[in-house]
Amino acid sequence: MSTLQQQTVNFNKNLVLSNNGGHLSNDAGLILVAEFMHQIHFKRLLKETLHFKENRKFYRYHKNQLFKQLLIQLIAGYFDDTAANKLTADMSFELVLDNLVASQPTLSRYINQISADDLAGITKLVAKLAQLVITQKKQRQLIIDLDSTHSDTFGYQKGSAFNTHYQTNGYHPLLAFDGFSGCLLGAKLRPGNEYTSKNAEAFLKPLLKQYAALDVLVRADSGFAKPEIYAACEEAGAKFTIRLKANPKLQRIAEHLIHVGQPGEDFAEKDVQWHRLTDYQPDTWGRAYPVIIKSTRPAGELLFKHEFIVTNLELAFASDVFELYHQRGAMEDLIKEVKSGFAFDKTDSSSFTANQFRMLLAGVAYNLVQAMKKLVFPAELGNATSATLRFKLFHLAGRVTQHARKLWLHLSSTNVFDDLYWQTLFRIQEFRLTSN
Image (cartoon, helix red, strand yellow):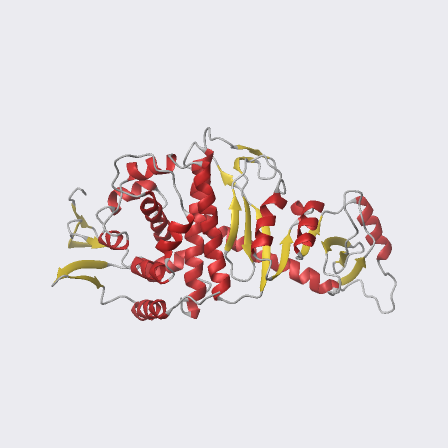
């Protein structure tokens, strides 16, 4: 219970602040999330994917219910578990969670009881939500953007290690996003000292198998330039464009391919040249793959700088391959959003398994909101950040009353985004899942 306080303010001595306004809610907009979850049969999806081991004899909250509460808290922007102690009295949370809102100790015990086997179901849920969006949007193509990121750790946490690239201690998660829908296709938490591409092919293969019916392209930076990934793509019939690190041999080849002294050449202007190698095959490669070379001489300089991409796009123009690869830069924004918007890099637990659970939970929250943006939100919110969505739709003042066996959620009559709220609600209620 909150301590009652009264405080005057300096700019108006007649104004007194007090926290005795009663059971008002600051999250009435979460009704939109609950309505969307109902439309996509989210409760059934939880039952199909999450199979937590239950060792408790007497309990009030089912583990799926606790998972859902943590999920809603993340979507609302409450990243600390202690927020639950206040939210147990929040009417909007009670409505969204069927009047079962657990306190922080209950949530913490639940997180610490998560097993490695439980994580498989959550990983599957992340993938299911991504597939739902891709299916409903009737995508015929998929771009798998592979990358890794860093999650800071503090103190002793299992699996935490020093990463020389980031020059700090932490974890080194592996991620895959769809370049079209922006959905998180998969994520895996790894110790901080694991190299970027370690076991990346094992992470990639299930994704290639899941979307075998689509035209798939894999994009990745030079950290993923390894023959095992090329072979996995070839075996699945997928295309790939992966940056290569420059090495002395490639540098020598690129220098010999440069055309200099052309008629009308002006060194005051930028010069870009494209070349394609068809017979480049290091000893570790199973076969030769085309290597595209982009040689750039900045304006006013004499020397060329070279970039290299390995691909199995045999017929694509060299410039198109580079343009396609550089579009993967949008993935940096997606990583930033899943981390800052949903606490993907939150590492509050000493247990590696518990921290991996938090990471996957953030992935579920991200994909659920991504599904709303791509399937039901108005066009103006199609690329909105989580901060914008919370400001405009989720964090709304509301008050709950009961009359004639009906619950009434009274929203503010001065809400600036009132039209947007009702438009979104109507779009959600009109949405129906289409069959595969």
